[in-house]
Amino acid sequence: MLPGSAPVVLALAVASLFLSIAPVVGWRPWPNQKINASELVFGGSKKYEGSSEFVHMKYHMGPVLTANITVHTIWYGAWKKSQKRIIREFINSISAVDSKRPSVAGWWKTVQLYTDQTGDNISRAVRLGEEKNDRFYSHGKTLTRLSIQSVIKSAVTASTRPLPINPKSGLYLLLTSDDVYVQDFCQNVCGFHYFTFPSIVGYTLPYAWVGNSAKQCPGLCAYPFAVPDYIPGLKPLRSPNGDTGVDGMISVIGHEIAELATNPLVNAWYAGGDPMFPVEIADLCEGIYGTGGGGSYTGQMMNGADGATYNMNGIRRRFLLQWVWNHVLNYCTGPNALDP
Image (cartoon, rainbow, N blue to C red; front, side, top):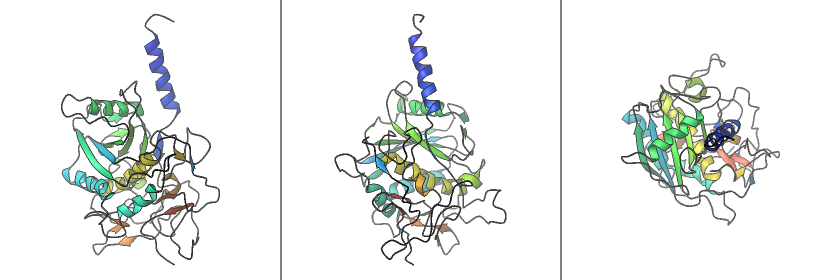
């Protein structure tokens, strides 16, 4: 080995490892997914969907987020103030226990059922932390999975108002605007989560990326507010906040935050025997928004007086948010479940 070549070899090894172990992704709208629900009844009440005796959600002894969770947001690209307000309220709604039922806070109660090895539950408190704007696309309009980590590094090492370093209870949420292409975006991937490499960022930080699909693939990532070409004749539903791309992002953001809380370093809660391809608590319920959901059917949802479709209430706004897996009951559960 040539003198001075060790850092180069190490960097190539890390890059090779990252590219071979895919971040945990959110898939939709499930053109090839097997139907995951039936007319199952639990305890005389049809509140739970997607039950499977073959699913064994297991704890692998890794850390989970039991301390108060802070979501630090990176707004990458061109974002409207109205779009930011929708996403901020959703994050703040996770801990807003006084919201009208069915609520986002009620949805989070399922996530709270998960514990660490000491028996401590996932924190009830989720708050919006510091924010960083990258409106000038400092790393370009095309991002790879590795360059996403470089965007996060820029945010936490900025000379002015850097994001705080919080490896134990901080989540770093990178949101890309509708004119940014991310590796694998729109190829069944609408978002993913992983953790940063110290060799790139300087710290191991749990993070998620979610993209605005409004201009690139709304039928894939903003369903059912947009309809994919392979479902002819199906009309899109009206989004609750009047922004198809952002309303579609909400469920993906919820998906990733729930999985980050229960599996931040990809060694805590997941099903399946392969840690490189874990099946996590939101993966098992992809596409299920209400009672009877599964496959390409969303399940029972609610319609507002304005014709908008939603299934949960936030502080003031309404949202459409997928259910998550309840490992106690072995079902997907949600606060908007309907009795038979």
